Length: 125
Image (cartoon, rainbow, N blue to C red; front, side, top):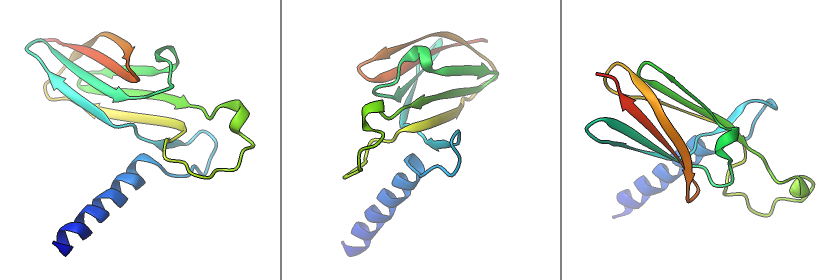
């Protein structure tokens, strides 16, 4: 039981390092949002958790079987001089890259649904 608890703590630490780190340069990517990927017969759906980020501010690039999602989740201007008591929601530049099986996909559309970016990719057979 102790080994299991230690394993869970190690996994939590690894996830924290993956999703949030302090930037060393102003335009550096600082975090990766969590995502889910679903496959249907003709499409892939990628759901990326991005509360507070407008879809119009995101860059979505599809090249062959690689999908890149980039943008920035800015800290509200009124809080930039506030002292941080706790910060669990990451801010700053983010990027996620997904490699899908197969050869080629076309962006069918994207929209924000309940704080998630939903990307639809049509399979090109």
